[in-house]
Each structure stands twice: as C-alpha cells, then as structure tokens.
Image (cartoon, rainbow, N blue to C red; front, side, top):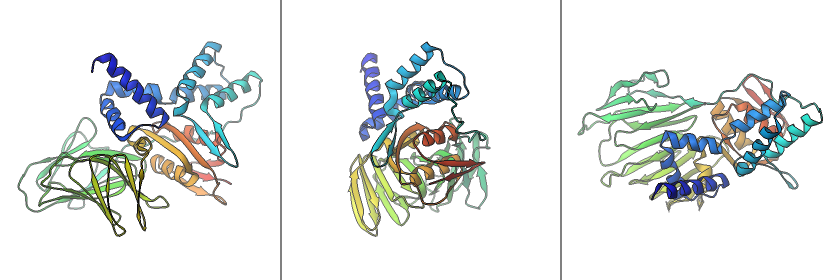
Length: 386
C-alpha cells in the first residue's frame, strides 16, 4: 500500500471510529497504526475535545472569541460532532452536541446573559500509569515510583521496567518446574501494561488485577484476573492459555480479547477481537468468533459486540452508549478515584458520550450537567441528585 492510499485508509478508519462503526478487524488495524507515537498524536489531535473544552472555559470566564476563531471552532466541531455527541433520553430523545453547547455560551455572551459557573471546585485530575506488584514473599513494589531496569528476580524470571513505562517478565530458567506467582494490581485511578514471560501482552484498566506465574511451567499457561483486562496472547499450541475470572474460564491458543468483571451491577463479559476462545462457566460453554461478546450470568448470552466501545478505555477514551447513570458514574469513579453517592432515587436517564480519559473530571462532569444530570461536587465526592 503506497503512502497516499495508506493515509486515505487511516482517514476512513478514523471516520468509522468517530461514528462507532468499526469492525473488530478494523479496530485492530487502527490500534496497530496508533502504536507509532507520531500517529497517535495525529489521531488525538483529530478526535479529542480538549481544544473545544478550552474554548468553552474561555467563554464561561467571559473571554470573547474573535469571529474568525469562533467560525473555526464551530467548523471543527461540525467535522467531529459524532465523536462527542451526548444524548439525553427522557419521554422523547433530545440530542445535545458540543456545537450546541458552544452556541449557547457564545449567544449568551453576545446577549450579556450571565452564565452560571458549573464547576468551581479543585481540579480532579485523570488517572495514569499506576500499579504495584505483589511478589511471592508478600513484598510490594510501587511500579510508578520505581526506576527503569531490573526490579526483582522471581521464580526463574526477571522483572524489568522498560523506558516505555511497562513491566516485562524475562525468562531466566527455561525448564523451571515449580511456579512462583506475582500479582500486578492497578488502584482506582491507575492503568498499566505488562508483558508475561511467554510474550503475552496484558493491559489492566483501573481497579484491576492479574495473578500469574513469573515463568510458565507444565502443559498450560494459567492466570487469574479481576476488574477489566485486555490480552494479546502469544501463540503456543503446546500450551493453551487459560484465564480464570469470577468462577469462569477462557481457553485460547493465541488471540486478542477483553474481559470485564467489575463488582456491582454490570454483567461479566468477554469480547473477542481476533482468533477464537472457548468461554466456560457453571452455565455452560460456548465458542466466540471475532467481533462477538459473551455476557455471563445464569446463562451465556452471545451477541455482536460494539468493539469500538469495548476498547475505548485502551484507546484512551470513555465511550458510553445509552448507558444508565450508575454505569457512567462507576466508570468515572474508578478512573478518577472518586466516591459517588446517590441522594434519593437514581435518575432514570440514559447517556451517550465519547471523551478523552486524559481530560480532568471537571470537564466530563460539566458535559454531564449539560445533558441534564444534577450533580453536587465536594472535594472528591460526587453526589448525584434526583
């Protein structure tokens, strides 16, 4: 593929990503392209809303935009509005785009109307690459504070922090017979990437964990996870890869998939991006094909997955589609390490939005308020009001 065709292809993928219409294979194609830091910077410039929210903040403070600047802002929003659209569903659906919000602020300033300050609290910073590893002897290593290089030797493998900000387990004893286990844990407000001794890549979302042998022994590779974890499993037909999660198990040879099993009201789910997996639970067993999701409860329900939404956290976004308030606030609380309370009945609203996880929580909460969600913010506690 020559350079011009390559750029056209990536442009098409970006459009599909913004519209939420990517297939599993297209999602993987875009992810591979984004592994290049230059490509990721271009992607984020095209899709995130930081510059738009900065303009909103200027307007809220009473600062005016020059007509030409306003024109450019509106044109930019119109070009990406599908990326940052918010729906509020009540008796009838009302669509509120950020373009409309900008228009509201702009027209308000034109008419000298007072715009109330939505958020005047301290900045609620986003999460980041934070995790700790629990060694075999119970010692804990704070990976965020640890320097690069070898951190420990554990059961035939060396734990190495790379200059890319991840941890690799490098095998030292290929024929080790006794397994030694480590556990990597991300706190609320944390995420992390590790590479297991077999080359399997693991991405942990906030409030998640993985327990694994530092060097795989025996005839299988078995790990246990909590929270939300994405795998890119290294192929090894002689050693099936087994993932235990919440009383269920996934068996694979080499594949890419996401597991989500946070405590609470959301169902346990597995979404397959590439390859094939067998999902087993007390309810039975089923095979997944790429682009399918299994939701596990009293039965296993298999549906076509919205892969862009499932993988949004790994791509650096929140993406909600007709999500209820509890789901939205649970994701916000985990990533920003906040406490969420409900005063009275939980509002019966469904919300959809896509916004960068690297933005301060204040901006996201401001958008929720614009969609009709009544919030009270005190320090790091968010109260949802009727």
